Image (cartoon, rainbow, N blue to C red; front, side, top):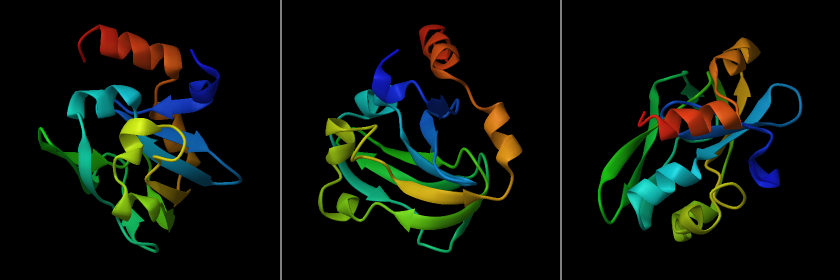
Length: 130
């Protein structure tokens, strides 16, 4: 477990969640996911004020290999999007846990965090072949 990922929670769809202040979380895709995708060339995320629902698609991520859905790990309202991704989506490959985050969401139900995996459980999930 690295320091950068020690406080993250993960979905089985390979998104990570970092709890910020109050009910706000930051969401990105895991290093494993960006590795599987290869070079990322385009990202589509919801707009500020859009509602997202846990386990529902909230956008797409396109790489040189494929286009994949991005699933929201929590429900709530998008309060911030990572504007840097529109001009430089490759930052997700370079910094999946820092500059490569996707959106920040004001959660409507913090209890949904309990359904996510911690670092060790996520690593076990990956090692078991999903």
